[in-house]
Image (cartoon, rainbow, N blue to C red; front, side, top):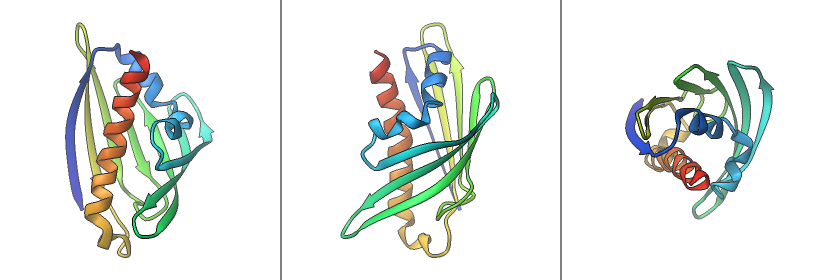
Length: 142
């Protein structure tokens, strides 16, 4: 449906950033729109999570979705497996330089027919969530 790509750079080591990206249960501390994240299953190469998100506009809407995260050396591939964004894929690639780590993010947004009405708002929230979480990880570690 729509692909969004962006890049960030932080003066931190690859492994430190990766460890904090994978600390999903801490995400509600970063973003008030994330009510809760539960780990459903966890192994060295996969983590399954359930996220409860709060969207506020005229009405407050609570959305529960599940996501499967596949962990590789330099990348994290996440796919939303239930909810209105089912099929959405988020790829995070970490590239360590001498004094920093470059983070490339690619979001391939998929929405149910009912949710397509809110696509501009959801695209904005997706980028805001991912960027906000990564920036807050960077600030937390400074």
